[in-house]
Length: 212
Length: 212
DNA sequence: GAATGTGAAGGTTTTCACAGCA
DNA sequence: TGCTGTGAAAACCTTCACATTC
Image 1 (cartoon, rainbow over the protein chains, first blue to last red):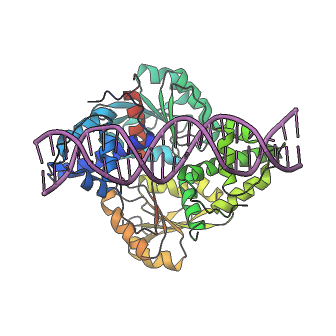
Image 2 (image 1 turned 135 degrees about the horizontal axis):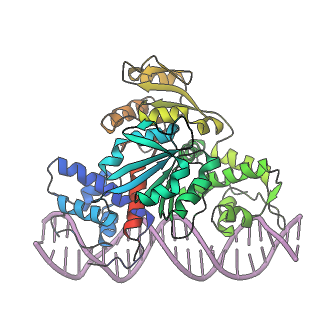
Image 3 (image 1 turned 90 degrees about the horizontal axis):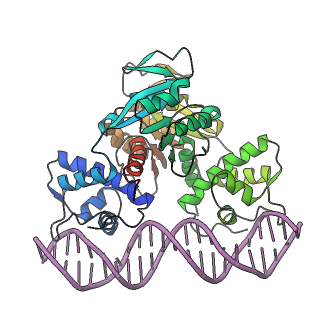
């Protein structure tokens, strides 16, 4: 089994998430094995790609037969860190923030929104799905004391960098940012951006350039 | 000026959106020109990358000087189709749907949410930011009659494919999907998926594999 | 002198194709 | 026979480096 010596590409990680979902569905259908071919077809990928992706982490399949559904899912969970709970803090309870606070998929995958912050006095102290909204002034100290692993930033663009700096100062190493702005973080902090507009712009580009 | 003969990569399109934002900010600061070097630094890219990306679409710069901010922004808008209005329909007014309905960035970039649909009788007929929620049963006919360009799917996973099939039947060629499921669409339909869990899983992977 | 535009080089990711094993 | 695991080839994307232009 390769000890993951080579750097794993972003795309491979992304596809691992996809395989994980497919395997969860297959498990519900009581399938016991699946071939790379079939797994690929479900998500418009190629069998070779599936096999290559998995091969970075080990040899999980059986030649002539395919991959054992349950075991492979567990292995991917292990690789991705999905077989544990992650403590998540959400900063900003505006449109998007409150949607995220209620989003049920997170809990299902082990992402436990433990703290919620805002700077609006009307929101601080209010109850969001059982979580009391805290004052953003306590952000840094609370992410430390509550052992937060991941912070979701859902504040307006103007305050996003300040929030980011606070949590980085609190030792946070993983941030998911919904503000439409480019945050600056140190090299050892992983930052991912979720920008809905950029996705729509992608579609606009595709429509705009259809006839080429 | 190259007539965009070669296929433009996803990453280039993505960066174009990023440049566009940077240029909009520079325009506000009344900057008239910017070099690839400076533009790159703003988003942790390389100057060569910026120049290469732009060169796929033409020669917009002046040697020795850089790129004209306003003109370049217009050019990118033209390329991406951002200098016009796009009619968007939103299907599903749950957590995420209602956040999107209120999301102000969309309108700013010319994405006009014109129709909103749901299947919940309590929601149908209600007013969301000036838009009356329509019955999802009218989805297909209304996307046609209202000239919808882009559909955002924000319904539960279980009903997403049905919604998708309806709008595809209505001639829609661009879909942004928030349901955590892999939709099947014909080849001439552009589909983009926005899955918050996958983003968090990416972060989980990074944290889980920090020491390698 | 300064910065673009772009072939060529370098690096990464995907696909191919087949040996090897159940 | 069927399907994995994987080097090698192909395709793709990024960076380099420099001629070119202002």
